[in-house]
Image 1 (cartoon, helix red, strand yellow):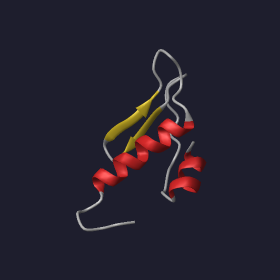
Image 2 (cartoon, helix red, strand yellow):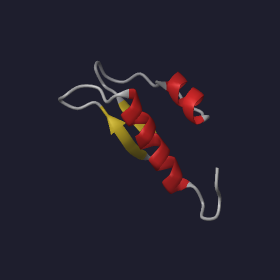
Image 3 (cartoon, helix red, strand yellow):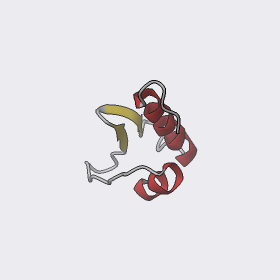
Image 4 (cartoon, one colour):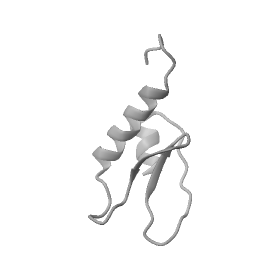
Length: 64
């Protein structure tokens, strides 16, 4: 997933090992996607969640 985020969104990402079966995606200090009782989120859902979180963090007046 870290490679996908770097490739698709051109952001720096790192993989941190957690507990067995854990999957949580953070942007800054906010959880934007995570595994739930239904399983892992799709790559598309994770990418969209990270895109939205990055857009909220972007200072006003900056377009990328």
